[in-house]
Length: 181
Ligand code: SF4
Image 1: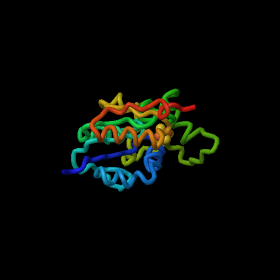
Image 2: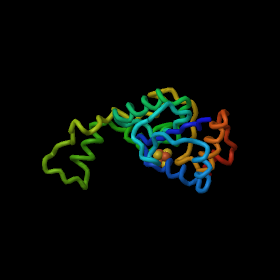
Image 3: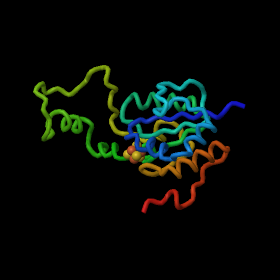
């Protein structure tokens, strides 16, 4: 019987949630036995190859490329999980939602105390994905099936959620795995 397929990606995140997944330590050998990895920074596959059973999304959407990747994930994943606070509510990158985008760009490229920009130009090369007006949590862009909070969620929380989903159950994590004090 074919193994379930898993895909993961990082949108506007710091890869800390992926590092937490790697923190499952020796259980990664068990995971490799249980699943096939599709697109993921872990194997460096850039595109989803086939429909997958579980997709894990780290990070929210700050630019048009994030939105495109997230929509492609949604279309290919039976179950899609927002992993970590950036995916769930925008996280640290969403601090920029407090000021207009034009002000952020001016501070970053023109007016900031450490800026050296003799040309006085804000980068606008067409190769650079367009920034969105604000940072959006994933559920405001596509339907999300489950949420795994934390910054990052612990390796144990990720393991418990993944094994539940692979067993066909909704993840119901005990208090110890979702408390942050
Ligand atoms: S939730 Fe935390 S660890 Fe995960 S991508 Fe965001 S900042 Fe990084």
